[in-house]
Length: 405
Ligand SMILES: Nc1ncnc2c1ncn2[C@@H]1O[C@H](COP(=O)(O)OP(=O)(O)OP(=O)(O)O)[C@@H](O)[C@H]1O
Ligand SMILES: [Mg+2]
Image 1 (cartoon, rainbow, N blue to C red):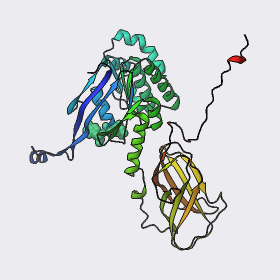
Image 2: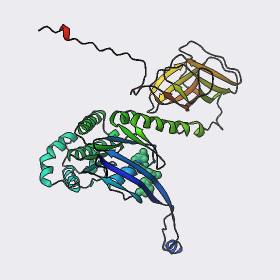
Image 3: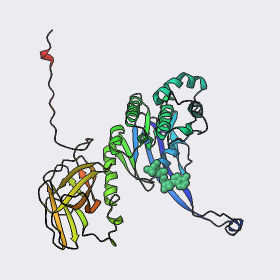
Image 4: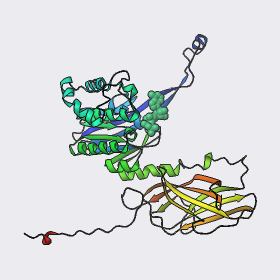
């Protein structure tokens, strides 16, 4: 193992057996004896990377891509089918919700149990006990059985134990998202403090912003394969490319309008570049056109068209409608397209989706609505977090000469 590394994962693969049917009767058991009723499934294939001592590496990927399986293999909870994991130092992990807790035991007993599993002597736990409970803010509930804890309380206790054992390597799965915002902020402060103290961290989050904020590098998993490893910003970019290329967020394929008798239907929504081509990526700050194609069964007047852009966490970041432009088009029977030209779209880099709706002026009932009708990527030059991206100029001014001695 390289002396600078805390974690080394060598050609790691993990196979699960997926059982399709279970023999329920004795007859079935006899008939199926020795016959395989399972299928092999590779949840991880040839994963190979290292984490240097003191580094924080993120793991991103869609649901089921293998993130938790990889963390469990690193934490030693799952045994790899092939390959190996090498670790240097004491490891502590916060995996799935409630993992490692005994529901029948009290919070207090679980703290001792968890710490003892990590090899921490009882005397040491007693010394740190109050700190753990205070961090988890569970003073009033620590003697209750954990089966009565809310999911947020579980995470608080789990995180408090995981960090207070002062590990050399900390492994954190998605769980932080379960805590409320104040607790999340407290955990982040703690993670930063641990980073300053040289703790090595392996971190799974579905939030691109959080991954960019916390991790220096990140791994992208896709169906058990490691498709990218590099700077966190580039990893998120690569993850977004997967989402766009595979049209994973598009609702188009699942939309079924047949059988409904609508007066007007939105057939498609597309993003167009300033030159009029349909595109799935556009530079932040450039102009764009959203084209809404409709089909009308009969003529309609006083229509209001609405377009919205939402980010990958579902927040509407832009919305416009013909009502606010005091334009109430009259629609003829047949198909047509209405184009919304947006002079500048100064959104932060990331994945976005466009929604469209049509309604009659003065009502709030949509004739039709098509959410997530198209997905696109905004390419931004910087590495900024947040919702908008706009040029910024910075000037440093020294105020020394104004200080009177
Ligand atoms: N014990 C198991 N037996 C069989 N299959 C499993 C087992 N654990 C995980 N899997 C399968 O392995 C794949 C990867 O699961 P994993 O939990 O690692 O995904 P993930 O990336 O953590 O997803 P999520 O974002 O939803 O947490 C999934 O298809 C899952 O069904
Ligand atoms: Mg998971």
